[in-house]
Image (tube, rainbow, N blue to C red):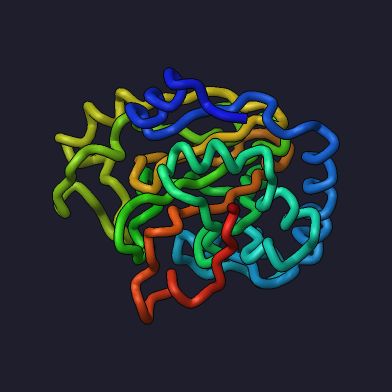
Length: 247
């Protein structure tokens, strides 16, 4: 499968593209069943909501925000990340042979009902260390995602914009109170995703998500791919994990 010339130009312009019903329902269910078991038993390594927002949390009521390092957890996760079907598309958007970087994302992401927090506006590349920004993230909706349960929102074209340090807060979140940012935030794009939909988005694209206001957990799969020629900087977290070539 490949993107049309129009689809590729839209990705380059907007910084993201949605591939509707890309993964079949059975594959989503297999991933979801294993993810739920790991979430239920809080199998490490994990990130909690308290770690994310920087607050203490009652150890008896730990809310898992994401399962880390999923590539090495189960063959079902690994098979999705190495999927043949998406490789030609990744080659197109990167303009290079794609390689999975296990240092970043490589996660099952959650928005748990009532206990999740919102994700502030940010660029994924803020903590990554590579020679260039030629990286994309692949987001798989394992069930329906919408405004009520915390679907992704994007600021289209922001991956090509230059920003000053004064436009960001602590932890490099894009400030929603900084007046010059507000008009840009008001132009943001929100959509709905159905089970099996895939979103590919650029490492510099500004995005965010609300907390989950429903009674059902929202669980998604995300991993990151870089161009083969885009090397991780030495002695950084980005260079401390193995990479998987998708030739």
